[in-house]
Length: 234
Image (cartoon, rainbow, N blue to C red; front, top):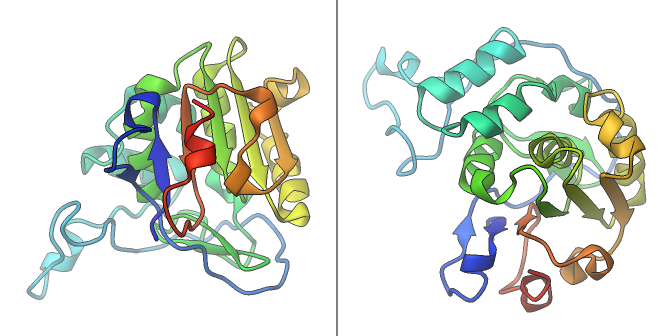
């Protein structure tokens, strides 16, 4: 099942916002930091511009970039990263810090991060961040379930700022440790030092009640059905 992004207004709706995908990957830890450029398709058919149908068309809607700035620029040009607030925060958290050295940091596709987990594709992150931008403003509180690499946790932290709070929960201890190290290498590290960003080893299905209620909850993991316990935390 796709991952879900929830806001208070949506928690009682049967039609939750869906963005993300099943978490797949190998069961081995991988080193962080990847610097290779890429060329990849930008979005799934039916969601964004349609897939190319004839030779030559395939180059017309690729969100590739030789560097992080170009990747973000292309996501904006294609109307995927629509929130300036989200884009500003996203631009300060370099994806290469959260992607293994064996991966393609600026490829618009999921990347394996070890322990059976992945970091979602940039267009999925952009879509979720844009949808939740109005619920992740300065001073607001965000819960990031299945925080994995810590990338979105860091971006959310910069979106809510020093007066807000972001809590990430992840059930794999090794990923939590790695995500904390990665976040501290970004501008969001200062927020973590001040206790405004926290990441815990916990069961994602239960969220993290101690820091609730939350203005929005992002679920970046597979779910078998409606997560009523998490919805109650808003």
